[in-house]
Image (cartoon, rainbow, N blue to C red):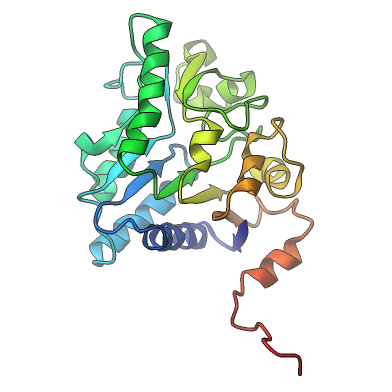
Length: 268
């Protein structure tokens, strides 16, 4: 796990975007990248920097496929508060990813069984696409990853989950009161997320500091779903100073971020 700490939100966005682009190359995306996409405020700057890379000719997402982390149950995918519409507005129209190649979990069906079957098909669709080259992530204030709330199985697959009360409270600002926030969602499982080639997690603000510390330096535990990043061979966390405030090994992370340039290959 690499922990990269930046001074400003703009720096966080640029560093995160650079790591997404580097991850696409490292994991063999070629001209048909497959991106895992997160919603929320944390990755917005990252998407803006990816758009800059497209404008400058350093990236092209016109043949990309995107897979959303999650979707609410009970909200049509044409609704303005659905995650599909959010990603169309905040990703497809920003970086040039074709809307028809944006995949989102199915949150509307005639039965629970139909949603469960569609969730299994979602994992298969990711596999059919060749797997996700780079998965973009945020982290919830309670440590959730996607909508994998505390207590989620560490090897879980895409499935139905009930939203924690804290998550519903955090998301109520987007709705006309908490009573309108959906109670359930479909989310990629932690096991699904871990199959991506690279994970790039962005976290900013003091409200994420406790969750970030538990993710990076706490035990591997279902109590902090994001701690599964400790198991991934190519996970990158990009933080601002407030989100990194609780890290006890800050000095080491800063030294490690310098890379290999100062490594001594021979004892002098």
